[in-house]
Image (cartoon, rainbow, N blue to C red):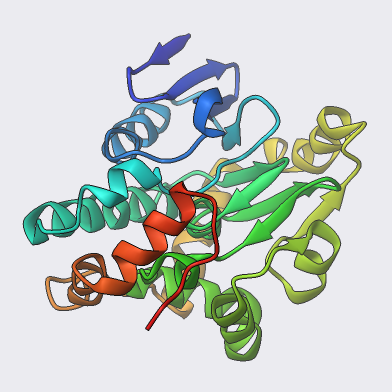
Length: 260
């Protein structure tokens, strides 16, 4: 049963598996405001189907995603209200993924950068192809991760590795991502579908009640903070600053930024 939106993301339900697929080839699945806004409804639709036991997040065309669409981000400068709305939409989408009652597996191929890494961290399990690369890039653009994004990152890799990833903004391989805990498994890019199936089939055979209740209890151990107006303030402030203007212009013109 396919369901799609005009937001570059679609939902396909086949038996016990629901797949949410990001598909914007031109931008290598960059996330737009409309994509973030569509995600909670697609998660809710997958949840409504009793037969669905597992939700996949995936990217089409060989990449998971390159983070937020830079053209849309640039338009936030000079418009704090729009920046706040964008940040809220991101936070709501990732909260919907994290709070889904059914397990969410993020299957990552190719590029996974910026906001796409933050989204992957909201899933329960991250399985990467051997050709995947990861980078947390706000420092190249003069922006910041949301507070809830930082919480999930530190929970996954610890404070030290979080600082290294954020401060350097340098890409790392799938193997390195596995070593530090950013992803849970790395499988062959050449046999990605078959190996992914081997890893996820045991989940499908598990008790739906046990999986659902265990997920609830695990989230109680270290709950992610809900984004508030105050915690969004840093994101909004960043998009109104000079560093943001310079970082975005440097990205678009393919040069190194010259921050002051």
